[in-house]
Image 1 (cartoon, rainbow, N blue to C red):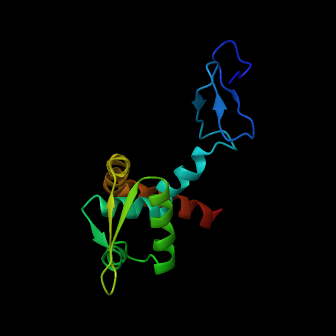
Image 2 (cartoon, helix red, strand yellow; image 1 turned 90 degrees about the vertical axis):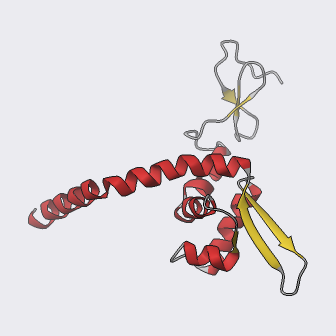
Length: 146
């Protein structure tokens, strides 16, 4: 594919889904408004995505056990989240043909890698919550007196 670029800089791909470099290789740029990587980023970093991946990093879960682990998620939202993460290749859904069906969810190698990175953010945030709470209190105090 001839991208038209001669300096190696990305050029928009037809349809705007991703850019291509001078060699025709796709270059994903999550900061570009129409880059298709944004959808996967949303699945991974959305509230329920990050919590589902974090919980699944502990091991395989059946749906209801995962729902209990990710406290506060609705059945519908968890199902949608897992379906999106499965489509993106982060989650493996294994259904056994029993009555009732036994469905288990686990992480793929890609999902394990994502979860490891996200757990770093979760652990960092939990450790920094006293600072966050202090900042919130200062902000709220400044807004209430102004």
